[in-house]
Figure 1 (spheres, rainbow, N blue to C red):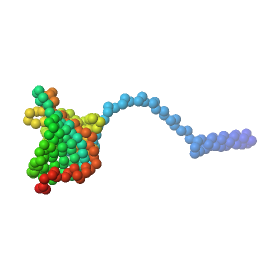
Figure 2: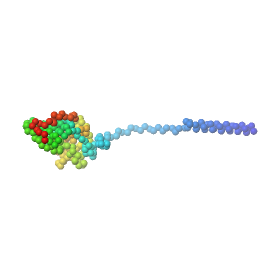
Figure 3: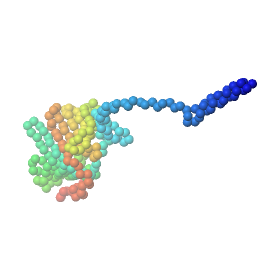
Figure 4: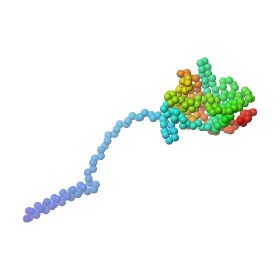
Length: 248
C-alpha cells in the first residue's frame, strides 16, 4: 500500500508539473511569434523619360503635341490692355523690308505707330468699328469702318487663328520652347494653298504672339519678333483722335 501510494503521488506531481508548463507557454505574451521576413533592397530604377510639358485647359491637363496643339491654343485668351513693339521683316529674292510697329491696346481700341525704312510714319487708331489713318508727312486723316480682323492685318500678324482652322494633319510639330526669354507654346504647320510652312510662338500667360516665321520651302520669307509686353493699361491720351479728325 505504501509503494502504491507513493507511485500514485509521484504521478500526480508529474501531471501537475506538465500542466503548469503548458499554462506557462500558453499564457498571453508567451506564444512564439513568426520571424519577420526581411526583403532584399531593390536596386534603384533608371529615371523615366521626361514628361511632355502640359497645359491646363479647364480642369483637364494635357500635353502640347501636334495632336493636341489646336485644342490647347483654342483655350488661350489675349489680354486686352498692353503695349509692345513688333519688328517685322519680309524677304524676297534679292531684297527685304523691315518695319517697326509700336502697339498700344486697351479694350476694343488699338493704336499703331508704323515706322518703315522710309522716313514716313504711318499712324492708325481703331476704336470699336471705326478706323483712322494718317501719315507723318500729311495733315490728311482717313476715316472708315474697321472690319473684323483689321487689327491683326494692320500689324501684319499671321494670326494663330489661321492655325486653328488648318486640317489637323497639317500640324507638323508642337510643344513648349523658350523664345527670346519667354516660355512659349510652339506650333509649326503647313499653311495656305501655296503650302508655306509657318511657325508661331505664343505666350500662354498673355495669349500674345511673341514671334512668327513663314517659310517657302526652306527659304524664310517673313519674320515677326515682339518685345516683352508691358501689361499695364496704356494712358488714355494714347487713343486721342488726331487733330482734325471727328468721331464716327
